[in-house]
Amino acid sequence: MKLVIQRVSESQVTIDGQVKGKIQKGFMVLVGFCEGDTKEIVDKMVDKMIGLRIFEDENGKMNLSLEDVKGSLLSISQFTLYADCKKGRRPSFIKAAKPDVAIPLYDYFNQRIISKGISLETGVFGADMKVSLINDGPVTIILDSQEICS
Image 1 (cartoon, helix red, strand yellow):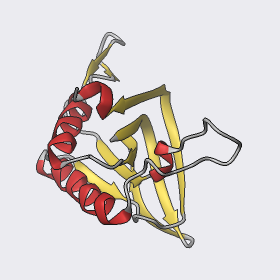
Image 2: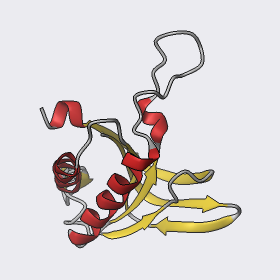
Image 3: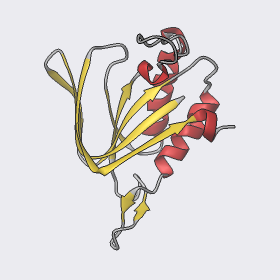
Image 4: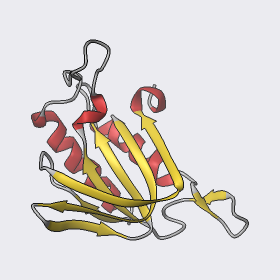
């Protein structure tokens, strides 16, 4: 499982010209799954993400979490996080989890965020989405379950 977390002052996802999800201060998170990912991995990754202290405190230090600032989260499924570009010029996505694995895990990921009391907006799995954001900082953090959960 991979997460690309961007600290944003605002973000939204549009599908077929309609805004599907929109947040103000918080995280815009690209979420990718690979074969072998489990609910246990999702639990660890959600806890790590929610607890990241990447918002500035009164002294300008990154010391506050998403919960501390009462931020929101925009979750976007993104199988292309598992692109393999080692050979040729066309990426291979063979490492990305198939929809029958990824969809239930993505749904579980989103449910876990809600269960933590975080305000959540989402895109639609597999849809052609247009994502816009104002990256605050900019701050972008990449979490990989291969590093976090091993």
